[in-house]
Length: 80
Image 1: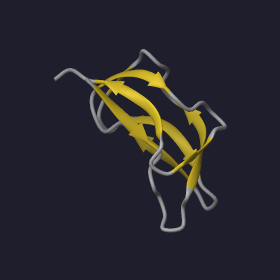
Image 2: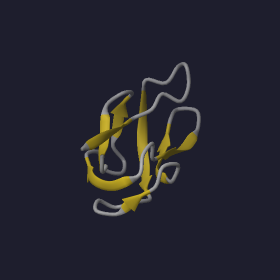
Image 3: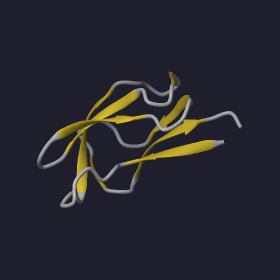
Image 4: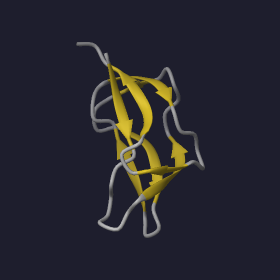
């Protein structure tokens, strides 16, 4: 089963975020709470953590992409 990773809403005025760095590559194992990527908003940069254990199956949005809040940026394959 796949779980989506979405662009999170970090602040009240945030409409979009820019992906600065992916710390994991597609095909790599991830653990819940592990940092997947760094995003930048108009006010700050922040790390985004994995919400589940699994394998980063697909990166939908690459580095330097500006993405609206709630849009899918990656998929994690989980065993259930």
